[in-house]
Image 1: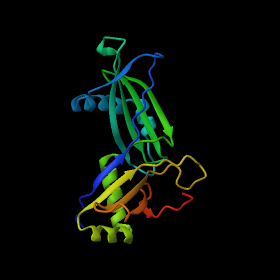
Image 2 (image 1 turned 45 degrees about the vertical axis):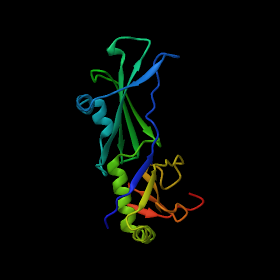
Image 3 (image 1 turned 60 degrees about the horizontal axis):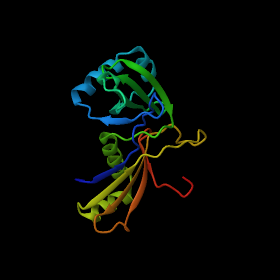
Image 4 (image 1 turned 180 degrees about the horizontal axis):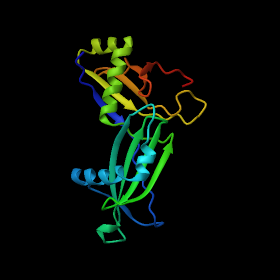
Length: 201
């Protein structure tokens, strides 16, 4: 099936907490080459290697990096970079903070933390939905290529919920001509399953 969905991912911005209270912080442009260098330094560190260790699920995705500066300090060295990864095993978000040269300043392992999806994860969620949901296939066929897809990445905070620690995607499919004719499915990327969400979750 040749889908050309518009994936309108509602993501949660990567959080930045300033070290100096009440300081003015601005986001800066970060070049691809800079991200590459910083990733290499982060990923070669012992701290990251320990945090990223996996046994049963090898999936670890790089979500993105953002660069920030304290406008009260003129020096470029005052800038910091936050790089975010998602480890499927355990549903752990790894957030690494470095200086502008890539020196690791802080590394956090966050459970049940709102973490944006990568484009690859969104594409995989759409693929699974088409593969495993008759309703999605039906609306895709009826839309005749004019299908819109919206994606959300919910987080289950209750450790008692069987979906806790899973990479979840809520997908809404609807024809461009009518949002009223929509299909909502929950894709569990961790275990590769698709289901219709219920009123209770």
